[in-house]
Image 1: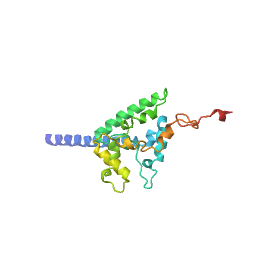
Image 2: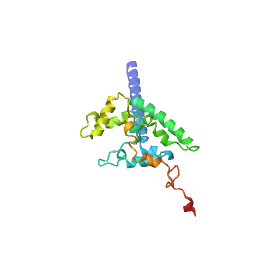
Image 3: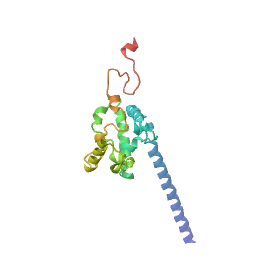
Image 4: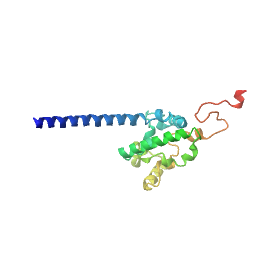
Length: 196
């Protein structure tokens, strides 16, 4: 009788642990996916220029095959699940804090573009462009650039050459001009001529 009781308790514990582990995994995967795309990332007003320029880019779906990279595909490391989840949590917390600070100051996005290797990960690029080293039909310029990249031993990054990859005309969108009549959130503002 004692053996049957312990067997039932052991099976019950195994069943409960299986449900908890499976449920945790499903919940985590759901949260990771729900917070990986421009719908989530673009909910912060400071990210609107990036969402808009991403939609215009080949990586944002403006291509004949209908393929689309999500924000997390490029802006998080893909070196392994633990690295990815830790970077996602750290980046998410930092972004929330930075968004709160934009109430007091507008981010200098152009300066941040100079540090793009801190925000775009080659492991993300290489997860889609896995066979780039032997890709056929490259232009001679592209073939030379990719050969140089692979020979650099990590000294070069994809964004060394592809400076605005994923965001078509990003620099033009971020550069204030005399013709620009929108505030930092992308909302139109009345110019002096319009208000008269």
